[in-house]
Image 1: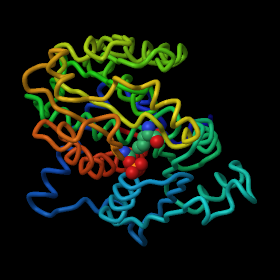
Image 2: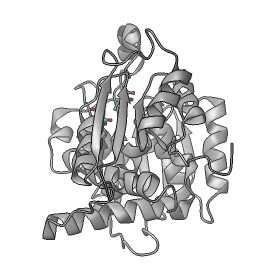
Image 3: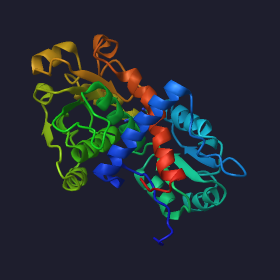
Image 4: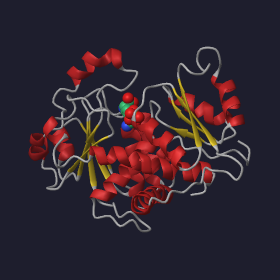
Length: 330
Ligand code: CP
Ligand code: NVA
């Protein structure tokens, strides 16, 4: 990479603990200021014209699309949503050619892809910042919003540190893209994370190394605990969290996965049996299916899922500001 290569956001692992903290704090500040005063930072409005941002999405999306497309518009930029049937990519044109063409005409690329190598390749050949809007390995925009949500429901200070050290997250379910970035962020911010997966669905060994590296980047790393027993993960947890058992692209495994994950549904009984902290909160990146969490938890008073979804907007503003407006200086 040349010294002028743009800085990309492909995973939470690309951020130092201090940078992740700053992105979450800035998201909080934008949320507060915009809600109180209506004042928005028009930082994607250039002197002569709006900055354009290409949004290349090869998979469906509600939250990521609405939050990033909305954030770009709010900031005075112009989002161009490019669904998989809208552009030549993948059918008539290579990723390499697409990266060069998109980055020659836009200020940034936000990309949702299947294999993580697709967004990594896009970044490699792009002259403008690339932001990962979900790959099969990572979902950084989600995790910035998640730590904003966790800080909001915890006695956090939004000062130089978020003050989340010592909290415990329990992840019950599939070891997937959302979990990987959450575990990396937790390691960086000093938050313990206990992961309960069925046998055969645990974190791949290589990813364990990536999470370990994230822990070494932190002065006070959070611990990673792995188990096959949901109750064990739930013990003393402040946050209970899960995601779908069948991620996009795994649809043909639906029956097999539903059978394997039996007993891993988050319910009030599980929280009680496992001994979660008294004021535990429930999180889910959405979209949600009933098998991974019972209705009483999902729609109950401990659930912060819709706050978490809204926080995607504030996280998107913070990330676009850092990577597109400020060129990765955080
Ligand atoms: N949580 C999330 O990324 O949702 P979408 O797939 O709807 O964007
Ligand atoms: N793990 C899910 C997250 C969707 C936001 C998926 O990849 O489909």
